[in-house]
Image 1 (spheres, rainbow, N blue to C red):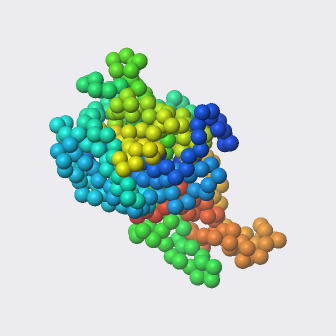
Image 2: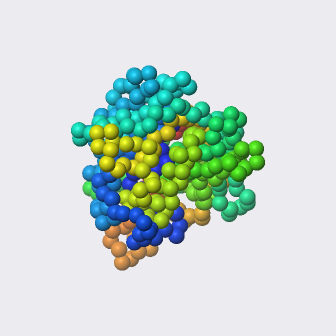
Image 3: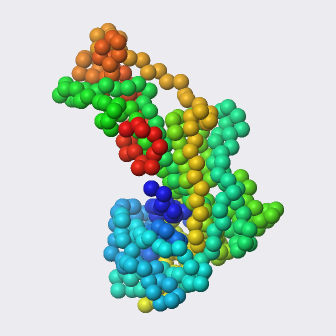
Length: 388
């Protein structure tokens, strides 16, 4: 679950612009259309290291699974002439290895063998990322947005540049308990709160999908204070029962910070990483067997620190929107909707639940937790509640 770089800067290389005001059909001056470039994302860190490989496509190309690279041999090399085991491809284009703690006496780099060519990043000594001082939220009043923020600083003054990623998990409940679901053939599929066979308890998860960067260079005491990682609305249902967030922090070299800042600017201006790319965002990866090739990517070497917290409903972040969840017998529905036959009503009020009046019907949005906050029945292994 707690993957330190599971979603490194971009949750996937197929990134669409998430910044308000972004427009399509924009071509920044001084850049060229580039296609089929090797795109590398990830960083080398202690513990789980994830590297993603893909190919860039043009503005008019369709985005599908063909952009992911699945036939590469990927290794992490050390300056003592050793390398890790071959990274395992855990999903299309995503390669993983468990690293030992990074040694300050060694340098590390990425090696890729692909289609008869060899690629390497530059050797770098690991930066030691400091711990975050705090992970907290800010909500200034009722109806106001919720901001999750961090405070941090580097007491060793190794770097003034930071990058963050995060993962979120949440539990949601349906408004009413569905005792069963009426299937199309008229049979009833019963549900049970004591097992996972229900649609009352659900869980969701998400991860950061935009660049989160900052510098403490101009800040007093080399400290980052109240850095906003995300903004949520108070009616967001992920805060309705129990919410969890884990934030991963890495410090960056000035060159890495400049690379990611340039790449972020390009994404915002051209609505995606697969738009025309400026030559200055190439990064620190080169093709040794063909130096004329251009590629996109910067592999930083740094330890990762994490901080996590749970937020319970009682903390008051959640402000539910009023929702009508009335229940009806079939005879009531027939009398309320004289122009509809019973089959149509059963499709509209697909689920039923049992109360003191017997089997009654309500809307799917009231009875099915899977309609809330992009949730489903996949409960995280680490989740602290006993609900199933």
